[in-house]
Amino acid sequence: MTDSTILDLFPSASAGRFGRRQKRERGARLPVTIVTGFLGAGKTTLVQRFLKSSEGRGTALIVNEFGSEGIDDALLRESTDEVTLLGNGCLCCNTRSDLQLALRKLVADRDHGKIPHFGRVLIETSGLADISPILQTFSTDRALGDEFAVEVVVAVVDAVSGLKNLEKAPEARKQAILADRIVVSKTDIADTKARKKLLAMLEDLNPRAVIDVAVKGDIDPKSLTDTGQADAIERHSGFVAEASHSDGIVSFVMRDRAPLIWPVFQRSMETLIALRGPDLLRIKGLLNLAGSKGPVVFQAVQHLIHPPVELTEWPDQDHSSRVVFITRGISERQVDDLFKACRALGYSAEE
Image (cartoon, rainbow, N blue to C red; front, side, top):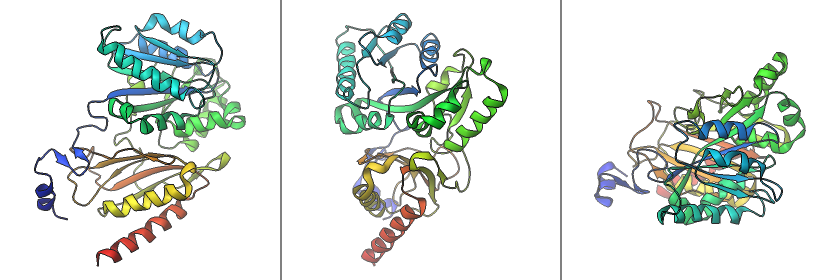
């Protein structure tokens, strides 16, 4: 389909097949930062420092803790005008509905003048949280998806106990693998050799994430508001090989320089999700689609596909499609074979 045909279908120069083109992925929606990390990693200290910074002003905070008495909640309450405590559970389990209610209440209270205006929401998860269902929450609830957009997922890893936690706790590994940024804490009291070994392990677990080092929570506040990745997809140029982790989790990047046909890509993803949805932990990519002027941001979490968003321009000179897959027990070759089969069938149907 040519550009002129597209413009005939969508007369507005700012509109495309996925609606109005946006300068950034989240558009006018409120940005959400998710801070996760294993027990004792130093999440609260990091969040506390962020809330006191200029970048952290106007942030509404949601804290998830186990137990009826919120300790982190009390520690952070003096740092921001609005703190919501989700206790007695984990955001990935029985309190997902509580998260939805808390977010809706924040917006309603702000709109009615009950709480000060806020321009960002920060969610601090419990140390045992699985963030996949948290990401799903913003997809399954259309009202939340229209109001909020997850901008960055930050995983905090303790330099003293991090190695042991990553080796023994599946939750700690998954938090690091799914993060956009990783903050290594307590480096001032950690053994130098252990610190270097931890950094090497984190780079192996998540080669796409920017790794920052924090001393007593002191870090550039932008680490909690920006992925730090030029194209928000991957830092590395060229082909990124499949990386295999414990628990059967693998990560790989698929790239294609030729423009993709949206119906073919869409059907390929729908087929993959129908067959292996629960094992698709996180998918995010920039697509070069035939007939689209700018890149299209595509995201999926398990069996849910976020509404695609077309951007007004590419973030860099690389206009190839690139999609990051983080899966459980699904190899790059299996995904590639599926896409090739769908592409062949799609082209045959057009001929």
